[in-house]
Amino acid sequence: MTKDPPIDDGNDPENGHGPSRERGAPMRIERASTVGEFLARAGAFLEAREAEHNLIFGICSQIEADPGAYDAPPYLAAILHGDKVVGAAIRTPPWRLVLSMVDHPGAVHRLADDLAGEPLPGVVGPSESAAPFAEAWGRARGIQPHLVRNERAFRLRRVIPPRPAPGAMVLGGPEHRQLLRDWLQAFHEEAIQGGPAQDFDRLVDRMLRGAGRIPYLWVDGGRPVSFAGVGGLTPHGIRVGPVYTPPELRGRGYASNVVAGVSQLQLDGGRTFVFLFTDLANPTANKIYQAIGYEPVNDVDEWDFESDGS
Image (cartoon, rainbow, N blue to C red):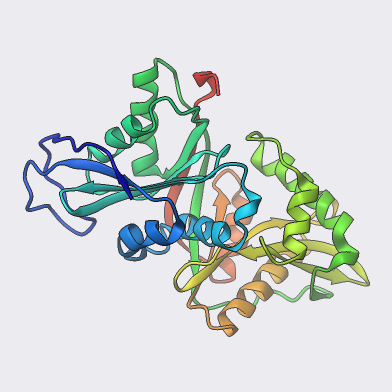
C-alpha cells in the first residue's frame, strides 16, 4: 500500500467499535493496488458490519472476477487513525466513490483531501458518512452537492414464501440475450436516472458468461415476465439486483416470486445472508421485499457533484 503523509486532527475516535485510546494519533490514507491488499488492511473492519458494507464487498468480488471490465484501475483506500482502520472507500471510474461507515469525524475530510484533483462525480454510502463527505467535498470546491436518491439496505436470513404466482424460475441463457439487454436498459432508465453511459450489450454478455451478475427469469406460459440478477459476493452472503418487471406485468406477484426463488437458491447454496437495496421512494418494492423476509439494515444515500465539471 502507498501511504499519504499523516495528519493529526486532534480528534479521539476508534476503529469502528468504541472510543479511541490514541489521542492525537495521526490520520492517514493507505491506498491499495489490489483487492487482496485492500481487504488485508480493511477487511476485518468491513466484515464487522458486513451488511452495511455489502456493496463494497460486492464490488471487490466483481473486480477480482472480471478485472478487464473496468476502464481504469480502481481506487482502493483504507482510512487509519493511528493503527486503527476507521473507514474505507473504493471507486471504479467513472462511477461514484463508494464509502463505508466511518468511525472518526475527521475521516471524510482526510479522504476528500486524498481525492483532491480527481474528477469525482459523486458519492454513495451510509447516510451518516456520505452526507458529511458530500458537504466536505462541496465546501472545498465551492459547489453544491445534489442528493440524488435515498436507498435502504436489506438483509435476509430466511425466505418467507410469497403468494404463488403462475410460472416458474429459470436461469437466463443466450436465448434470452436480447430480452435481458432491453430489460437492463429499461431498469437503468427507470431506476438509475443518470450516471455514466452504460454499454448494455457488454453488461448482458458479462452476465451470460458468469462474470457479473447471474440472471434469473420468471417465466409464465413460456413468456419471461420478470428478472432478477444475483452477484457481488460478501464473506458470508451475496446481493440480489437488479430486479425488473415490465410495467404492464406488475402487480401479479412475479417479482416477489423470482426474488424469493433466487434468495432461497443462495441460502440453499450455503450463503448465510442475501442482501438487496431498495429506493425509499418506491414503497411497493420496500413492502414486497420485507414480506418475503428482508429486514432493513441501514439507509444509504447517493450524492452527485454535478457542478464539479466532471
